[in-house]
Length: 304
Image 1 (cartoon, helix red, strand yellow):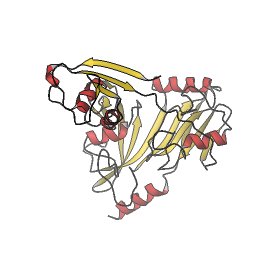
Image 2 (cartoon, one colour; image 1 turned 180 degrees about the horizontal axis):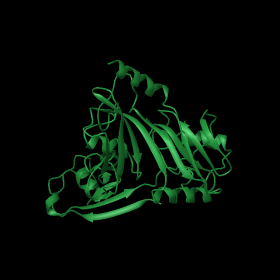
Image 3 (cartoon, one colour; image 1 turned 90 degrees about the horizontal axis):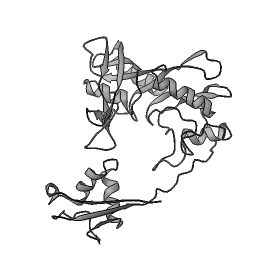
Image 4 (cartoon, helix red, strand yellow; image 1 turned 120 degrees about the vertical axis):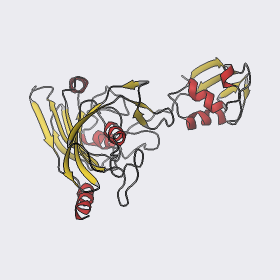
């Protein structure tokens, strides 16, 4: 079913473009999505279709109909994946840089989930629905490294609770821009979605969630630093946002920093993963080697 919204604009909105007013009423939607709704005739002002350039007048009544999203379906695909560990309850996968974790608009297939459905013959937990089966936690497309996947709902719930309770080891290695003043430290700053760009996260104190990141400088590379990050919480883009916030964005991160020649995306690797097994109740920990792309950049910076 589609969603319907009706509202009358206030005097402070008079003269504003329709998409600007809609973004205030529907902050969860991007400006481009709202403009598309206007162009598609899903937004009516006083019962009439308007253009995206329409400017609000006094006492305008706006109605919005958001069509039901087209259902995405994840299909099994025979895509090679690096499985570090597997049993009847879970898998630990070493995701390569550039691979998307689950299908979404713009990435309908070729994802880790497509590969997992083929490998596991569909036996993955159902808690996150048909698009994200088995996915307990995620890492970004251009972040490489270890990711845990649940095969059963029981395992999924048990592992998700560990993340919620901060009893889950997640350590990353990154190359950051600049020299750190202190060799170790903690960034304890809340993170929420940027009100200026809905695709970005930022440190904010409104509509935010607690975010805590610990760091340790492993190597001074002159104008760069090799850094170990340990997540206490797991917010979207947490390391990338926090490192940029303290003035040391991750190398190659063109969203929160700037691109780096020869590197596709940020130089960030999920190196260590540790958790209590849902069945044996024993602590398990996995460590992965730095991938080729990361090592090449590291060697280049070491040479100066």
